Image (cartoon, rainbow, N blue to C red; front, side, top):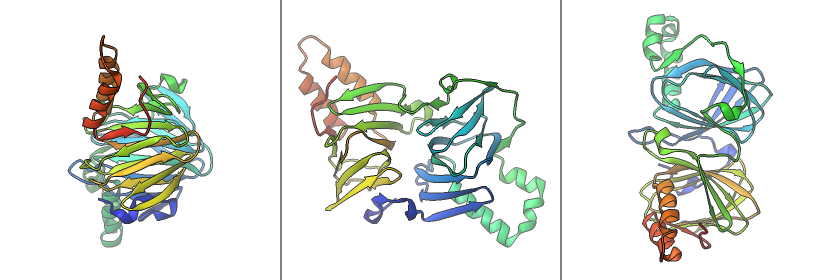
Length: 311
């Protein structure tokens, strides 16, 4: 778990760096818990770098391109990924990525993978017993969860046709609040029932208040604009490219300090999708008091809008 000293994480605050020939990965949040969740990193790729066609037998990857462009191949189709596009990779889903421009920046959220631990282990092998790297039997067993595959013939397609791609600004469903648009980017069914990933597009001076009953960390990636945060007697402003990580059971307030701020909620454990659907359904019933309905569901989910919700 992160402490109060890492509530505001800037690009230079990586606690582990992985340097390879054509890429550099910066780790900002190590995996935690039995599900090895909330591993957050940013990898910068050189032009022409490739993640070869392969699949994993376990683990979930939520990938967002921040800068540059990349070519995704999956399910017999090929498309170009641009800044703001999100890719959701699940077990046994083969894919490849080729980075088309210099300095492509990919923001990564991993679950049930432990990329950090794998790199530490590989470093130990290189330093202590490098001969194992040439032992095919050992390496096949060591990397048994990663299966390399021949890249198939693929036809060019629009990214909207790719089921694992969620283009910038798109999602499963969007709910409107006064000054806030909440878009479900990754459903609980895509993350082994563990959580949801949301995008919040927030008008200036709008935002959220959390009561401090949350037993899990709150983790946000700031995608656009600036967010003002108050937590644990501290106040700070996080800008695009930075992370906000609030420890469990900590009350906090968060609001946009400029128009059109966009953040990704990486650890939404509450059933927010269900709550928002229920609010719309209950509010539409004859004789219902929309304000009372909203208060009921927001209070039960430890979340309050800084202004009134609009169904």
